[in-house]
Image 1: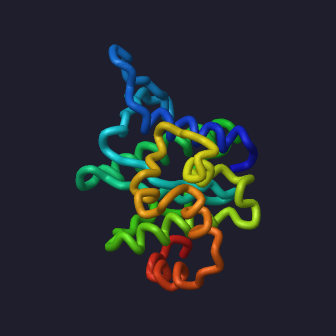
Image 2: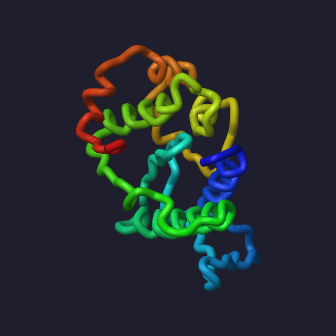
Length: 182
């Protein structure tokens, strides 16, 4: 991401992909490399639980409703964003260093600590980088971010805030096996 417009486009694409389509709303056509594609909506296929956007990468915590939904979503989404970025900056080729990395979450404990990791990732600019963290603190209500899978484990948003911001090395040890950044 080179500027705030790049972040805004990325977030707008997430909104388009993850928000329910209004009734009688035709699916949107987009052009990628001079080919027209129908922009698929994934609101019933994947659920975005948490995200953060950094200057050179992003993290999405996604729950799928069926096998392969994340793969299809990520392929479509990444292609569309790369097309935008390449056109805007008059470049060609791949934007991302490789395929996305998916990790199976085996337990509620892993889920909670991964959300913590994602929300702490922008540190020390905790509130400057685009993130779903304000949704969890109820400072924002983004319709296409589903916080209940995480917040159900906490008494209130303040309890989640304390969990995220507490000095806690156990989170690191729990998610060490996730090769998210390597």
